[in-house]
Image (cartoon, rainbow, N blue to C red; front, side):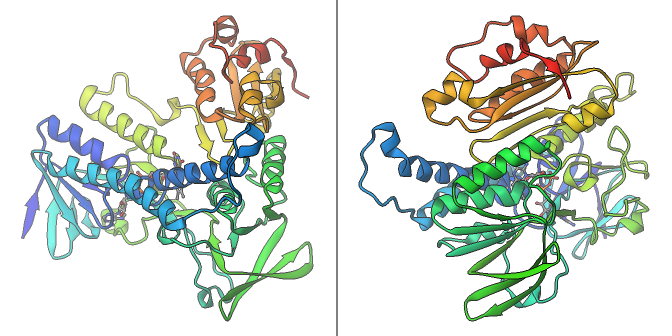
Length: 463
Ligand SMILES: Cc1cc2nc3c(=O)[nH]c(=O)nc-3n(C[C@H](O)[C@H](O)[C@H](O)COP(=O)(O)OP(=O)(O)OC[C@H]3O[C@@H](n4cnc5c(N)ncnc54)[C@H](O)[C@@H]3O)c2cc1C
């Protein structure tokens, strides 16, 4: 027997639930299917819990620096990991419940809890049930890559998901992967009190950023006592007693380290391998990402893919933006006169180490590749009053300008408040206005943002 709906949504990540809300509000009957936790990665194992833990780590760090601010505390500062986890669970649990109750209270929306699999282009099975619909929206997200390295199966390794269950302090946390997820976990656990080693195959951390950003971040982490092994490949793993042993190769030189815990943070892969996409005829690329056009339509009419599974973003805000694009084109402007498009969005994201990195648009390498005349503004955080007052002067901000059009091409703010201050630049980029608009705007003192106009007044040609 099959049940017919006007729309089926697979997955309750950042795009599925708001879309279900919009579709039902437009009078459609909707089935939404979730095999795991309501709210998906961001809510349960990604942004929300990790940023709650970053906040605990920040408190630990400030407490350990209290004397610098004239605050007397009895040393040593200790961290109660059970309480850190309880706080994180409460914050993330609240979001998870709110996604679930939001869906349960939606009229004309039926929730199915189980694994969804395509049976054809308009039919999806959940266990023994068959659901059909003319419109199917895929929002199945991604999961941690488990690399194939000899002996890894002998080691009780962790991923971003299992890290969420830790309620005791690892003595020595070895992190494989020096990109966004690895760095956030690395710094927070160092601040909680673990010894931390990060192993990265590349010659620098977060290689998609400019070299000056990578090296400033390396400096920030090393100052806190994190050991970073760059240009290093993990060759094999072994377990001895309660220790995991990692054998490594750094430019031909072999070495090994022993740690109490191993975290794998070497990338994400889309949850598309067990979705029966072949039965629906939906095309994926070589990495399993669902291929979509600029409006997030797959090659099969009536099937859309949103969020991490389409390879177009990889962030909560890109997934939510996918929902906005699909909903607008389907419901607000169904004839497609003014379709919203993925290509209209400007890349923007943050790395939540402390201080954070806020990014918008191009980096220097990308700006150079345009072959346009590029101007660069640069200001160290030591010359930002707000940072000095807060005692957080590590990092810098920089901006790249197209000299002819005066448009901002990109910016990076690595420094206190960088995740927020970047938005004044991002919004002017969206407005497609010249950088002089920011330069002439009166900003509030004392803030990090107030120095953005000053930086824009000191532009030099990009070397
Ligand atoms: C540690 C970590 C930190 C992060 N921090 C940030 C951050 O600070 N900022 C940011 O913007 N992004 C961050 N991200 C990325 C962000 O979490 C994701 O990009 C975001 O959650 C978007 O996910 P989504 O909507 O594509 O799907 P997801 O949230 O992954 O949800 C997909 C859902 O689909 C369900 N599902 C999968 N397959 C099936 C199936 N066959 N049947 C039924 N249900 C299925 C899953 O159970 C899941 O609930 C972080 C990620 C990680 C791992």
